Length: 108
Image 1: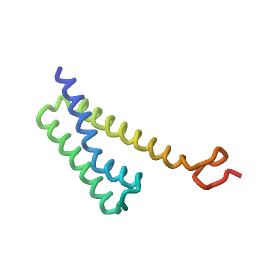
Image 2: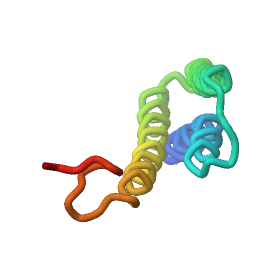
Image 3: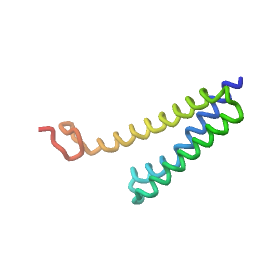
Image 4: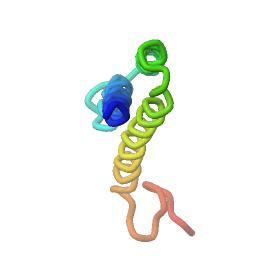
């Protein structure tokens, strides 16, 4: 049962760790406001620190569960970003006609 808790906690931390950058990404994707490079870097650093501290806490508290926790954390983080990348791709292709690969760029 401890393994299930490590996987669940790792998945939750991976999703929570991706929230700061995902929030800015959503704002940039929707065009609600201009997102600065500084804010993007700060959100990446916040995610990195949050996820690193979580791995350190698990390493200290339950060293035998670090691998399960880390794999679950990374898998959920990458899954969320794969979903975001798919949404961005679909949004970028929305304005393309059937004969175009990118918005406004003909294939001829």
